[in-house]
Amino acid sequence: MAVHLSFLLIFTGLAGSHSITTVSKVSVKAGEEITIPCLYDSKYINNVKYLCKGYYRFSCSTEIRTDSQSISEKFSISDDKIQKIFTVTIKDVTNKDTDYWCAVEDIGRLDDKKYFQLPATGGTPSVSVDRQEITGFKGGNININCYYRNFGVMKWCKLGRSCVTGSSGSIDGTGVTISESGPGVSTVTMSGLRTESSGWYSCVKEDIQMPVHVTVTDRPTTTTPAMTRSLTTLTTRSLTIVSASAVNHNPVSADQALITVQGEQQRAEKGRIISHNNARGLMWRVMWKDYKVLCLSSSQRVEVKDEDVTYSSLAPVLKKL
Image (cartoon, rainbow, N blue to C red; front, side):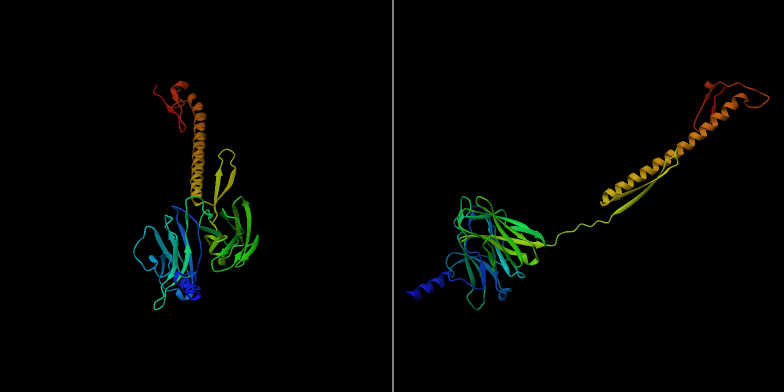
């Protein structure tokens, strides 16, 4: 009986595999999609990975492979050889999408496989998150809300590593706190993020898991060279020189400021010219007053009335008499 039971466990794959690590059971709402991470041993870096569907290990059907050129509307697969994790995405999950295997082809040996369940529900999943992809910056913090329906302790686990079970702890040197944010909501805070903090994690409630991928990047820095413009404006009446500086960190705004400066300079130049012309006109008016007394010559005096004269800013113009 014991021999038969052992054979059954091996045949169905329930005995498990030590070279592949994945989630065991993920609750998904029908019609949605889910991404499942499969961590593998370094000896499988160059091996073909694939997703196998079915309850039994040796009779499951291959749905998609990393070496396949065919495009599937329901399945997709990618292999991160640096992290040694391949991921499979299953779209439009139904109640028929229950039993799957993360599998690695091993030529000359039995393919290595790891089983996981994917029960679909028409209502709220037993454990869920807002999104499966989270990005944070080095030295910063991120928050992940884990929604649940079941009783029990909420855990935050890193795939292939340790778990934080209580209210606080650490994983790979990154601080982790778990707090109850409300009914059915646990908030996981990861603080002091490092490059090593990147990877796949899971909200775990009893035997249900929800995988979440965390990416940690350098905080972006914005450095735009300061642009300094100097404007010297000459006021024509007071002859006061006013110096102004415009500092702008936006290249576009700086160009606009330069246009404004040029416009002010042009207006100042026009004002200088107009003032000069007005001065000349005033001089001509004074001369014309004297000219009215002696017109043409001293021997011939002609009295000229103001209404017979047209003044301009440059010189007087004599009307025909």
